[in-house]
Length: 78
Image (cartoon, rainbow, N blue to C red; front, side):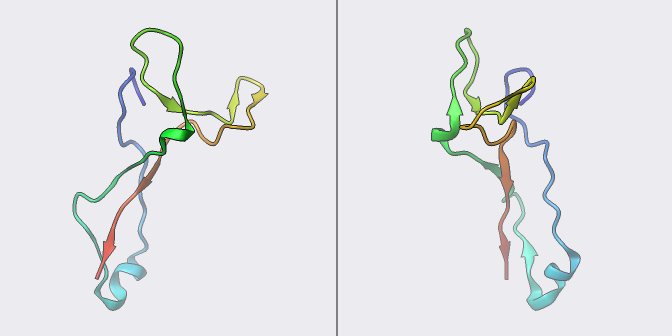
């Protein structure tokens, strides 16, 4: 997230060996964010969008947190 908007900044790296065997291919435009609403919190300030629960903020650990970004996924097809 940047400037209160979601972006797909993470990378998905697929091994060339996986793509070569059995004619597997990355499905074009299949990359996306993986979102689970139950893992989000809603900030208490105006116009803020929901965001993932962080594991850490400053020096504090949060048991319910998992990351400060969303996972990304893609489809590999044959």
